[in-house]
Length: 354
Image (cartoon, rainbow, N blue to C red; front, side, top):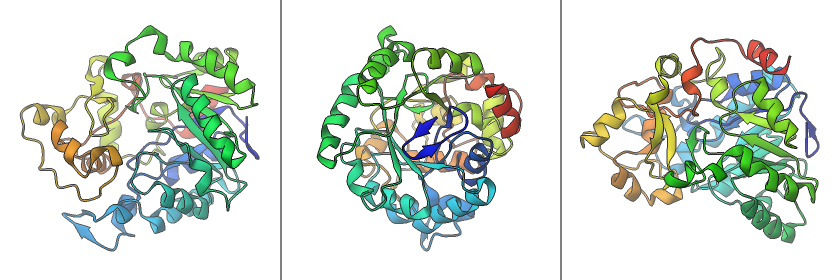
């Protein structure tokens, strides 16, 4: 699979998962085994027990610059490189974050070969990578209309996407649809793909399918629909090398199909995760007080939306990363309940490609 100037041996991208689910160990090992490992830029201030954070409040990174910590991101890339050497490495950076432009530049400086961006339409994404012409740019979309807008807006930079990821409503974390639209047949991934492939082929843009992809038969299905590859996130949580806490992995291993649901989020779109004690506390009005320390995403409006839905997403995702089962927010795709044991990244990649 070719993305810009970079060649990935197997047509598999490991989805970027934050806070701290896909950092150096997972991304480094996926790239080592021939996929594209993707480092999440979300919440890097928590890396290595907040070693790189200069200021803290309530034992959390203080300010958005500390939450999206440049030195920690560089250390994550450096440590991933020790695992995968010169194999391509990606970085997932949400367009909705308050420090998007700065974090994109930080990722380029840190050594990212490919930048992947969703959570909004990154219409000015090329503006921030003009000093790094070898860095490939990959937006995430959910409709052909969204890709059309991006192509039109990027024309002013004489740039088209080096690939596009099409994410359906079975993915983990935030969705590109409203709650009701997530359930509609026309918005299921296999129905989204054909018109996007038709448009992308006019510009030689590789299409990558994402959301609910579980095994090799799923991969073959979307390759047959004209995709160049797939993106898989949840499947990689079930690996020994995943950077998530062992408690996080255990939550998924213990989860039943009915435990995985669409949850309200301060970001304004539904997010898929496991129903845990946190959701019960929210419904009872007993969730932790919202202080908005990190000012992590624009749609939250500095805690306004967090108070409306009853929790701070930055704090609760970081709690999950650190293994707090009582207060953590545990994102997963619709198939997360199928994880029943942990395997190595090598074993998983072998299963998906042979």
